[in-house]
Every structure is written in structure tokens, then in C-alpha cells.
Image 1: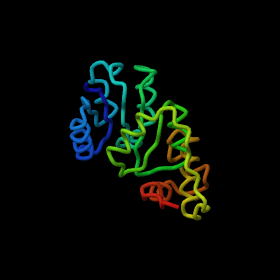
Image 2: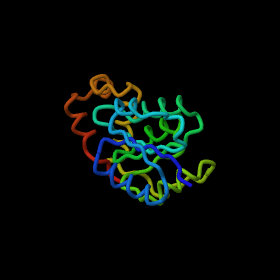
Image 3: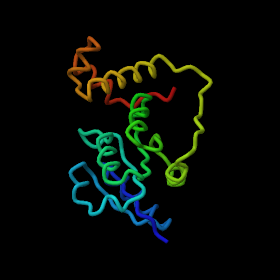
Image 4: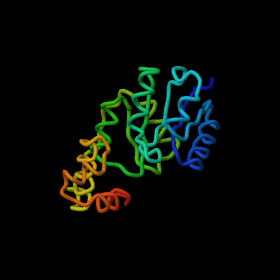
Length: 175
């Protein structure tokens, strides 16, 4: 029996590789590379599963969660990102995602997170975060508070807009 899954990611190569791997595991895969592509997909409500990237070009995948939950409140959504932060993870879960994974994530890990909807296990790290990681988390929190508006977040941080953009475009440190 095939299950329908939707992949929303602006990285077309990653999207195709993930789609191929999922189709080999009996998933019927639909793809969207932007929020605009999402409108072209028929029957979003028929998809019980979705994998959504946090950054879709200049747009936020958090907005996609709203659209998907509106189409199917029972949809299991996993958010993937290479730019993880506590603030965006909390926001994704508040909006309806069942889990939040860092890229690169294996297909097995994605399928496991989609299937474990009621899992309440949360891994707690024993070591404190580094100063660089704390800075990244704070920048993400302030950016989220200002609805992704970099200029407003930069003003709130008393930082030049370009400096903030440069810091946000770097991949976060792990710890």
C-alpha cells in the first residue's frame, strides 16, 4: 500500500534524491520547490505526511505549515533545516509540525519522525551551549519576534542590517 507524502524544499537536487528514496519505500511523492508551487498541487488534504524545509528561498517554511494544517489538520509534518535554532523549532511545533530535524537527515530518520507522532521523548544535552551557539539562538529568537523582518530585528539588536544578514547566512555551530 502506498502512502502520499509531500516534500517542500527549494533545493531541487535534495528534493529529487529524497523523493526517489521515499518512492523506493512505497511512498507516492509530490514535490513543491516554493510556496507558489504548493498552490499547483491537487488535493493537499489527501497527503497524510509532509517534509518541509525551513528556508524556501527568501520565504519561511513556517508559513507552509499553516497552509498544510489548514488543508489537513491531521497531517504529520516534519520540518528540515540546515539553520536550526530553538526558537524556530518551538515555532514549528506550535504551528503543527510533529518534529524538527537538522539536515542532513536520513530517510529512515525522517520516516521514523513522521510515524512517531505521540513520542514525548526529548533528548536533553548535558553540556551547555557555546557562546557562538547562544548568539545564533538569540538572533533567531529576535528575528522570529519581528516576523522575519531583518531590518526590524537589526534595529532591536542595535546591529547593522548587513552584519545581521551575514551572521544569519552562516551555518550555526552545533554546540
